[in-house]
Length: 157
Picture 1 (cartoon, rainbow, N blue to C red):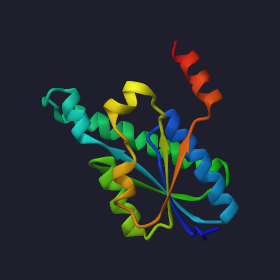
Picture 2 (cartoon, helix red, strand yellow):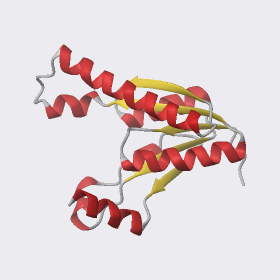
Picture 3 (tube, helix red, strand yellow):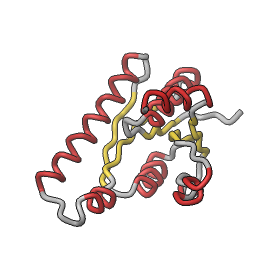
Picture 4 (cartoon, helix red, strand yellow):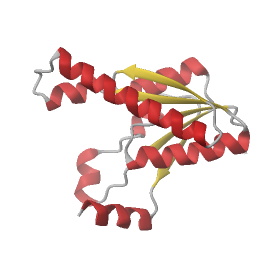
């Protein structure tokens, strides 16, 4: 098995992000790896959601929320014995993950993934594919099990 000495965990507060956080924390503890946690504000998505009318107040709220999510992740890791350095960025998540992984010389990037089926998969495309082409380290994609997906669907209904 490869020696992962420096791990970059990507966390957005979603269920998939929490799964990635759990998997990454377990690895970090087992390997005693240096751990970094990244939260990204995707301003492109934010601008699209507001039809280009994003105010300074709204921008500030997006940043505040992302920083709260980052702190939540760092606190969760700390409670489990993982010392992680938090990082915050504005931009497209794939770009920011790739940039920080390169800057840190990360050995492993851990991301969450929402499994899609049928037309949703075709329509949305493969979300993590561009990341695979952008980093020079290993990537762990944490996916929910079928039982977890059923539970999530039941909670959403």
